[in-house]
Length: 231
Ligand SMILES: O=C(O)c1ccccc1N[C@@H]1O[C@H](COP(=O)(O)O)[C@@H](O)[C@H]1O
Image (cartoon, rainbow, N blue to C red):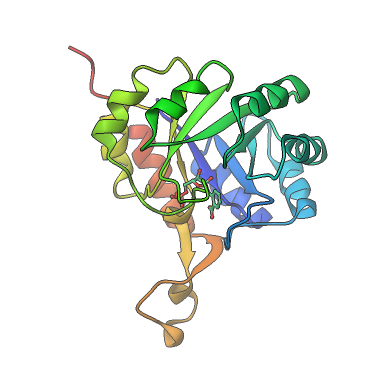
């Protein structure tokens, strides 16, 4: 069964939403140099990580300036795993894995399989995302899943599929890529228009809070989807 991570929690109430929906992991975004409604400060990350119950994996999601800063953050927040965005080198990753007890997940660019492959031996898992010029994720953009499926079938590491997933498209994504896990951030966020109809605009404004129905649908659709058996 495909595991599910709900990423970008900003409030303890949303941790409850994710856990009640059956999420296997939750993500807390700290120290990312992009403008995100899901970023929280270290103190809040400590608070939420501390409240994550047994059998649910807490993941610190970060895009640090240096591997030393990542080590410092991991030691402060004490997550079960750390998800590293950006251009950390293979040596940086090796330094990180030898310095912390948390499992290390490296974010790799779905459009750059050759670079991704270099991290296969050193990371505990590879998260395949659609990334922007800065190497950040959370773009809300999907990538070519057929191509991704071909690439990830050659990786030894567990693969986490991310990038523009929603309750509506996650079943297709699971069937096509057959990942170890799927990860969603913006696709289950609450739309500001849902809070105040009178300020409705054409473009939904993210609030950094989760939509409980969307989270429940996402988890159910990801988990009930069977991967296509190999003939
Ligand atoms: O969520 C963000 O805003 C974000 C910012 C910077 C780095 C990572 C971010 N999120 C991660 O990106 C992927 C995919 O997100 P989405 O579902 O496409 O919105 C996910 O792993 C988040 O952890």
